[in-house]
Length: 42
Length: 352
Image 1: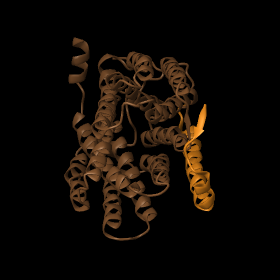
Image 2: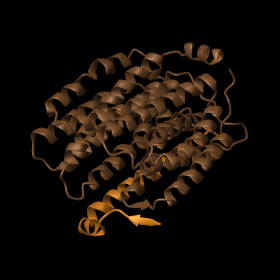
Image 3: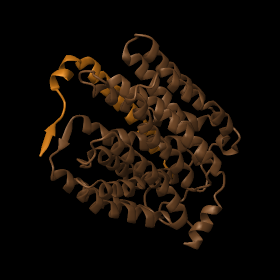
Image 4: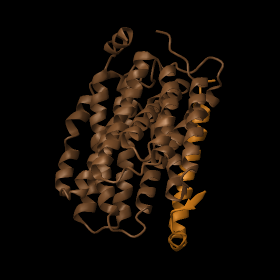
């Protein structure tokens, strides 16, 4: 039903870069959602 | 029909929409010329657009928030400078690809936030402005790709980038660019929690982001067919806002999400059927933005940033997994119906 379309070996070979990037993106996303939650009209 | 045309003829500051549309068009030309060139013949090329999506889309939330705090910042100027430097570094030096990629992403994010702020603050609660601004991107994506595929030299694309300068200067003439709030957006039904409305809008953006890449389009094999696809996407985005202003946001949201289902599901092998579905589904772009600005009118930049974060969240899975044929059609049908339900639940027609 769901098939993988990437090469997991590539991610293993660049693990630090890949997870570092994903962490940065996750932190930016979380920050934007938290700020938005506080800016919502009550 | 007459009333709708009358409402459209009364749109104020529509000039800023076309200025920002051109700036958005040129931004995407630069970015997709770069991306197409950078990924050609590269092993595991998916990593470059994946990083691009994250670093161009996600920071727009924080950049938008900063721009809301300091209205009047001309973010398009550093934005274009970063993109031009990035393309020059890529085209004329052998510096690591990720240096130019990061510069390109940041430039892209700055120009997007600038255009969103300018159109939302000058539209007095109308959707056409932001819809026309966003539609320029689709035309830019395919133009950038075509220029790269035909090996147009870098200097020519840099010249296209410089052509944005008078348009940036023209955008300064619009007063709303310097105010803090986007006035007049009141599209969320009374009694609906702002948190629910915002979550629903982001959910619809995520679904639209996924469907933009996940819809079955086995007909799309040639360059000219890709051109049709992006042109229709752009027209759909613009039409969503224009028709909402003319006939009502709730009607357009409900009709476009529901009408998209049969066309998207049955259009795998039929280009015109599929394109009709793509156009209908693209119409929800300005609708979701209007919902977010309605519940965050003092933070239009942040509201726009949430939609771009939603787009990243929707497109990110495409780089890793795909649904099997049949499952994707079922997924599209269910998700479009969910979108239609959420939008109809949240939206109200504005008082005229």
